[in-house]
Length: 173
Image 1 (cartoon, rainbow, N blue to C red):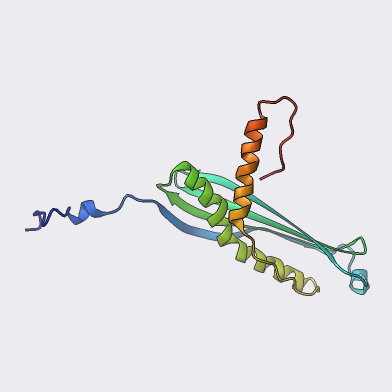
Image 2: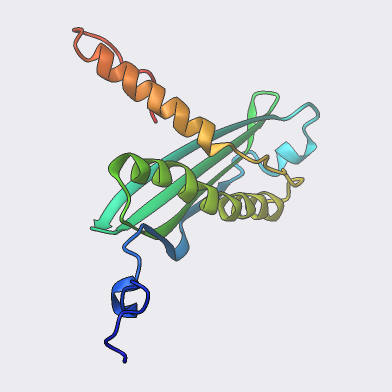
C-alpha cells in the first residue's frame, strides 16, 4: 500500500518542495574600531555635536548558495570642528540563499541581509560610544529597501551613461 498513489497524490519523497531557501548560517563582527583622538580635552568642549554616519555594504559569494554580506557603519562625531570620536563597525554574516532568480537574489542580498545585520551593528556602535565615555547615540532604523531602490537607479544611470565617453559614475552603491 505504501507504493500506491491515493487520489492522485505523489509519494512523500517526491512531495518535497524545490523552492527557494534563505538561511542565516553565521553572524559575526568582522572589524571594530573606536578612536577618541582629542580625549580628554574633548569632554570639556561646549557646543552642539555634529554627527556624520556612513554606510557601506559588501557581498562576496562563498559558494553556489552561500554569501558573506558585510555591513559597515562609520559614525564620526565632531564638536566645534574637533573630532570627538570615530566609531567603526563591520558586521558580517554568512547567508544561504538557493533557488532564487538572479534579480530576486540581488534584492535579497541588498535588503534582507542588511536588515538582519543592522541591529547587531548599531548595538556594537552604541556600546563603543558609551564605553568611550560619551553619551549614548540611538541609531535610527534604516530603510534598506529604499537604499536598494536608489542603488538600482544608480546602476541604470551608469549603464545608460556608459555609452558616453568621459562620464562619471553616480556615487557608490
